Amino acid sequence: MDCTDGEAPSFTPTQDAFCPAYDTRGGSGGPQCSAHGDFCFFCEYAESPADGDAVGQLKALARELAAAKKELPIIVSAVFRAYEGGVRQSIEWTDNAGKVVVAPEWSLDAIRRHLTFSNEFSGLFHNTVDHIFQSLISRLNDTVVDRETGLVHDEHRKALVDTIRQYSAWERHTKGVTLSSRRKK
Ligand SMILES: [Zn+2]
Image 1 (spheres, rainbow, N blue to C red):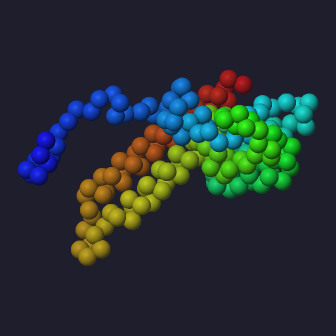
Image 2 (image 1 turned 180 degrees about the vertical axis):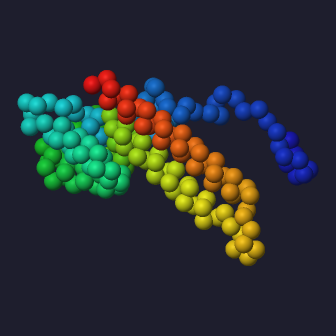
């Protein structure tokens, strides 16, 4: 089609044009650990009390900081320092190409990925969604009033009120989840 004739090109994409939000085959779709080939200590090792349980200790550290509502970058960096300081030197890892790596690096990105998207730390994902909503609300709030005329910009006001409404629904949902999991205990 000639794109210079002023009309927008129109086409129907095939299935190949899309990829899954979460790839259950461990492919490259999605933000979770299995979509990346780099080393993840929490994916490679399970908790084992007989083994000094470095995994359990690092997970407890992440949960403790999450319960104290620390921000994700602070938790990621605490886990990173704990791994570097006390665990890394005792680890050997065979990568996807079969090469044995002594003392593999567990990168900040890989730690953040596991903490956010593994479902083991669902509280951290909830905290992240809270931060996204709060950031959106704060940015939208900054754009509501026209600085020149002092009039309310209606489209921006609607987006702000709509986001606050959706955030309230999200808060009610997460509160409901917490209460029902407490009731089960
Ligand atoms: Zn992982």
